[in-house]
Length: 147
Image (cartoon, rainbow, N blue to C red; front, top):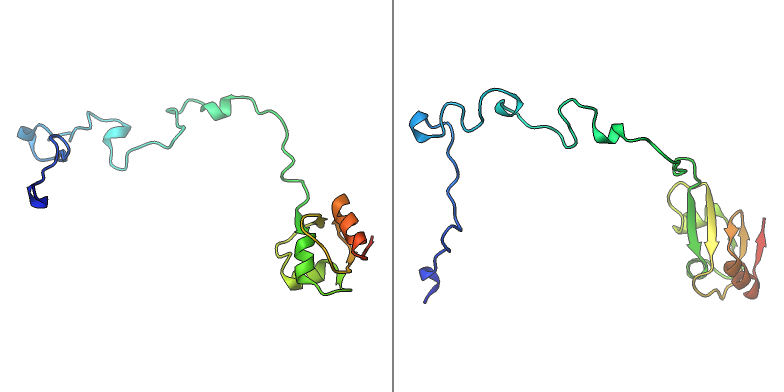
């Protein structure tokens, strides 16, 4: 058997239904769409969730609960390992310096420094929240945290 001798399995390639080709074709007149109504018109179709004008399910069910996402503060997270790579020994770390180095880019309400990674440089942290493990690592390296 060679490649040119292969054939599709029976029923694998079905011809498309040719509609609107006259009465004798069996697919003429209304072109398989039935008589009148929304689904017989051009551009037919309804959006997902539409229930024919009846009040849809997502509006019938009671709304419940509260979500704080719209009101919560946007917090940008920086790890001490990233600070170790980005700053020299004795540097002051604040929002402006974090933005110039590229560790903070998007708009945020506050910055929090977390304790992932190792810190070997003496840094002074200003105007940022600090986790307990990050505080421990900063003070262990000889740095300080100013409020």
